[in-house]
Image (cartoon, rainbow, N blue to C red):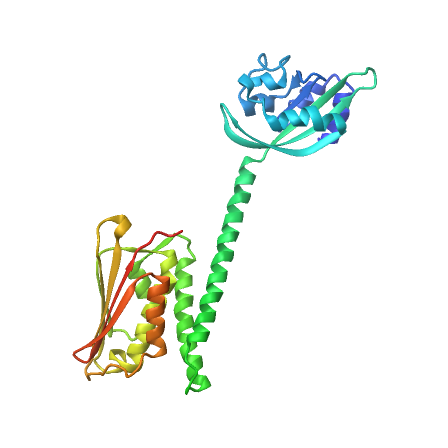
Length: 332
């Protein structure tokens, strides 16, 4: 039965009206011109946890210790309904004493019976609390997705702009760009689960999985999770260190190794910082570069501006040691 059928049934004073109305799943009331409840169906009593004897013959605004004494509903009754034949899906949100905060869509229609001049009102209540909560959740998820997409495109643009072009071939540029883009893609894949943080050891293993086995050693440190907003910057830095090590350092030498370890500098949650150490061991000593290359600049800028940390790059005993320190901020 749809609402149109219900309106016709109630206007005709059909003898079976009450029995049929009780089969309708949505709560409904019939009010007289004074707003006093004439009839209510079982769904109304079950939804709002009220008794029949306390409902029939009581003004709507007095029901349930005044739980329907709602400004929006008063406006519906006193202003909107008398001027309209029907009001469809009028939204009312209220904190009810027993059932808690709920959102209802009210459909109201006047029932003018042909055999007298009285005007009765039919109110149907559709509980949309769950669907409204889902809409809000979806809206927040969409906003977060949009925000992350904008940030992601910004990172890709930065990678393209910062990848060196002077004195390099198109093939060299392509290789460098794709290496950085792959690190970004791996970090994004780990973040797809939406947990809000990622285990540091898992992140490093994932980012460095494509490098030479046996040359990269994760000696590790205490268990620590990295907030999602820091995952991409950290992944880009580690990937850049590995790329530089392959081109100029330990990973480009037979027998060269890299040891990656970390520690937490403070036990207080609000002051925790991560100290990550990248230590290369070269079979043939390497000298510090004459100038800071693109990779070094990327490492320094990402550390400073994206992680609000600091990095020191030193060549001890002919091999690079990178000390990266940054606060472990909570995801927002």
